[in-house]
Image (cartoon, rainbow, N blue to C red; front, side, top):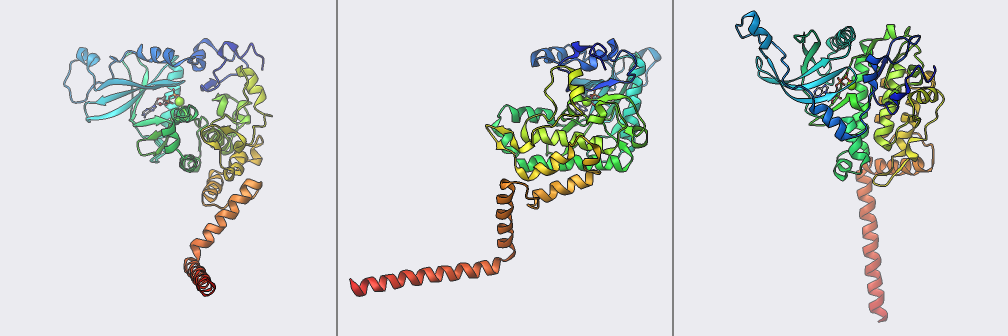
Length: 403
Ligand SMILES: Nc1ncnc2c1ncn2[C@@H]1O[C@H](COP(=O)(O)OP(=O)(O)O)[C@@H](O)[C@H]1O
Ligand SMILES: [Mg+2]
């Protein structure tokens, strides 16, 4: 894979989804380059967003009795704001005047055939998956100029990437809200959603903080099923597709994929959410990053120090490091196994691997022992108290006798 093939002007683009379908051809065509554009700073990004035409028409309404000419200008969905932008589409917040509710409209962009393919792929899987953590698609349609769009449940909240940024910037409110325990509970929620997709024979293949959304009550959603794949098809695939910073080594090499690839990506998200550091190699160019991924050994997650939160708890080290092992066979073989280990660790049952885990395990055992034997503890406490009072009284008597 030569540097030239990868068009290295796409540097710093590791956190963007890349979608490359033919390794023999020039890897990043001009049509694909936008997938790899990165926003160097927030101002540029906001400028770009505000340049969007919010007056587009999505419709028409089924309740309006219109002539053919009028239909073109009728708007069932009134676009109110830009909710986000990704590799395959622009997502708008809109009001559905027919059903009188807020919806999210994702308009697929790029070359028409690719836009249609991405849309078809997304609805194919989301339509099949029924889970409260996967926003349902209400409708698929196309704009006047033929671009497909989907209408889906509008999520209130923010992407996990924003929360990680707040934690990284030392935001004390975010640190108070997202304790280590709360963060692991989010990863457990994520694993449940991925588990339900795997049970339906579907791999997500683009699990990353941008595609994980947190609702108002910390309920978690996994969005963007645009590059998902049937497990059986992924086992025979040879295309490079995904987000380099979170993709498994086998995904970065366009090798066949299985559930273990999604487990790697969940592990990469968990690693970053806990330590606030990426577990990917810090290479400058995309080509170097893809080359380094298969052999890179990330630092143990609980050895990263952060001035606000200190070191992350060592009891989660084993499950997280196991999920991001280079060889798929060394990782968890199912999301259920990883979830179980994280739940056990939350409950104080974890393997003793170092002095930190030994001390924590001993303290946990003592607390549990105390909780289980409350009556005995009260009895011992009463005896100690009686003994101390007797000792003090005796001391006072002796003092008086000799004083
Ligand atoms: N249903 C939704 N409700 C609110 N915001 C959404 C919704 N779907 C997507 N978004 C926002 O739009 C961004 C891009 O959407 P996504 O589906 O990931 O597009 P892409 O396939 O182009 O990456 C997301 O990161 C998120 O911030
Ligand atoms: Mg996305």
